[in-house]
Length: 75
Image (cartoon, rainbow, N blue to C red; front, side, top):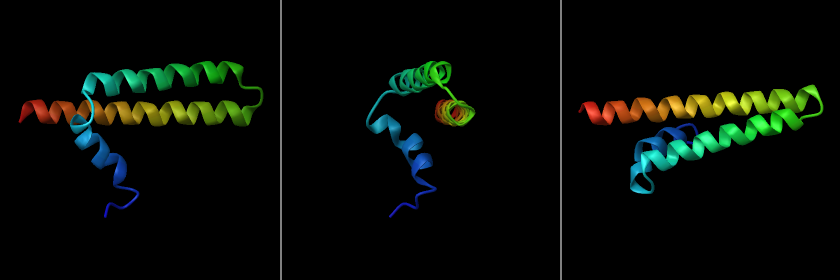
């Protein structure tokens, strides 16, 4: 059984079993782009902060995908 904290790491390591890295990258980009649109529509500061935190999480996920792909291709 996977601990909840380990799930993202396992998903990003094993994503090639269910999708191409390019598809995952495009999906993360779309999430980021849509959250930017949500930020523009946000009315109060809590909504804006949530959008920015979400964008930051997406950036960290994207960085992790890039690191994993570099590690896989170097090996």
